[in-house]
Image (cartoon, rainbow, N blue to C red; front, side):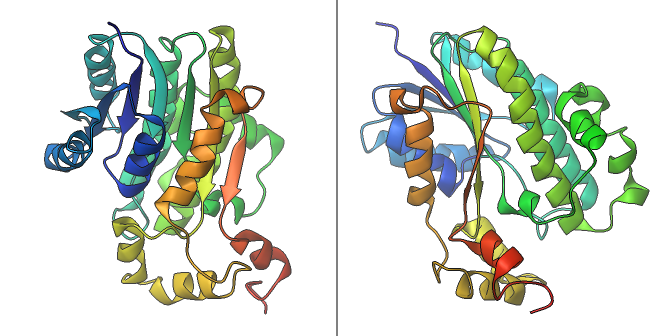
Length: 277
């Protein structure tokens, strides 16, 4: 019996939470740059009754993306995508952030969009960071949304001299993710599939703990302390949103980004997290 195939990138807490929530009964192909990370998550899930195949893949490489897609297709048509791969401002230099989080996500959405099965759906994990930067012009947004992935890093706004630091690179990458989802969902729709993004705030994961212990640690701790929710979030709460978006209950939702940050962005603009507060 051919089962539905789910492609998951990034063997992190959010990817695993979503895969556990919606991946039961499905064949899950789990890719991560570090194979041992994918193997560790696969063992946890397989021991709990899931069917997960770990695979080494590099989101920064289109060839690697094509390889994992080919691996997934050995088990059937790809019906679901969960993209949770990425690096953070405290983990990587500007070049790596743009290559992985920006270019890599764009290339992945392009490639999966060529093969996604009818009735399929995908979610990519963006970030609240894309919501807290100056608005771009309509032309800049269009460029981020529609420029072929191989030419994205040649855009004027993404050239090294125009990127201030790793946080700015990360913000640009996440803004691009959301614009790509809007453009790519049109192509996915032609195949009868849907695509959305989730923009989490402070979610307690190993990546977030790196941030707490990094140069902006106090900033992030202050952020969740002064957001309306008064706490950081959990990966399972992100999975709650993904489960809606990837189910029949979300059948009319595509091309959207869902902000799940405990109100931190609202507080940044209108509350105690305002920069001049």
